[in-house]
Length: 248
Length: 287
Image 1 (cartoon, helix red, strand yellow):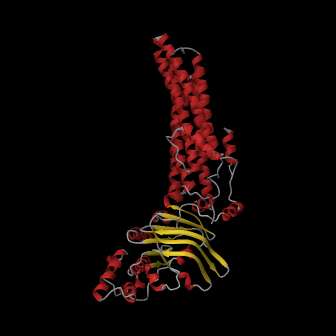
Image 2 (image 1 turned 30 degrees about the vertical axis):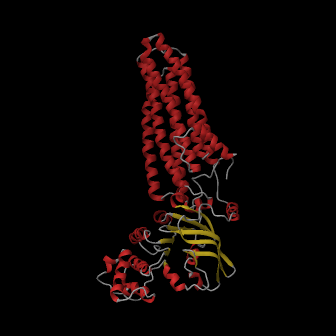
Image 3 (image 1 turned 90 degrees about the horizontal axis):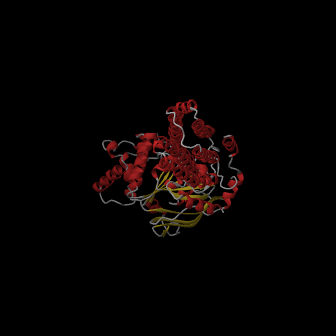
């Protein structure tokens, strides 16, 4: 057994080594999909901040690749279930990966939505209400990408500690979103003609918040794999307290 | 995201002999071995073949109207334990059994107890179908006749029909009851053996890998039958097929090197086993 909350690597140790390879391959593919989503999110936010419509358009077109990855990964899940009749941790891993695939695909859509926001602002030739608002985008993108990256690391290592750390960042993302909303509302009060841009920006920020939420969902699946405990729809603070207590 | 790739590389947890040794030190079974409605109660059961201990302090109940499956690698003691339940081990020279085994509160190892009626109460179906070299009718009628369960031919005919119906075989053999049982297909022979067991009104049916010699269709028929039989009997089944255990039983017991490692609801055992050895076995990580 590893250190701390690290459990066994669910992709290892089968007598039939091809099974190990298939599980490793599927998980690797899902991680690769996740890395692509992070990349897309970063590019989209950069494009928005820098007013780079070309990069934004590339992000939108690349979104289809993530959709195709979802189809391929689903196929692999289907084949594994049919061929290996998985049980226990293998079954939990495969079911969890299947859910993670769905979360990543939706997170990919949200990254494309941020890019669409960049394109919209650019093509309208809209001036941004205030450069400071971009700071919120930067902050939220950092947080969302960190959460996603950590949830994927947690998945790669079946590391409950790291997964709980993703939950702990939820609040920060929420606070940043609320602060950005307050900021944007003041623009509308000051100049009603900005309402179109502000709505577009709200969509962009909301998309980043959703990416963070998907990271949280992925972290929940890591706990399911490691502990066999379905922690969806539970109070995250209680969860952190409960699972941390158990570790001590 | 190089950290992800590194993490994959770092995540290693091979099963070591130290893990096994540690698990062996813990003799207490993980999970609830008792049944709320026990028919057979087994406590601190130990079995030796000469000097070799095959079963170590096993506690397990077989409840009313339930199927308990026993799984584990070859030589883990699951069949030995099963054979304790109707004293089949008595026939093996050098085999010694200690502990308490009760059927409806009666000690089945009581020296005054006659094992012949016991084996009618606790019937057994074996790995290889073993019909008597007699007619289909006689295979089923033999038990009730020697146990004096019927008074006349009409009653015996009715019992044979009822048993064959319960075993899901009647429609297939009703027109050829006088033909040899050995002439049936493997799956039919196994159902004939189940009919033979049912005919003597057992309370418990023991099955030792009853489908290992059968094709998937015959296996499916036996599994369907097991589910139907559960309404009237308690069933303990030893199987090497994990999927079969998952499909047919309500509780599953995992044996390893003579220890009962874990027992629990079948759903729990196959989705979230609590013991590492159980998980390793059912996920094919050794054995």
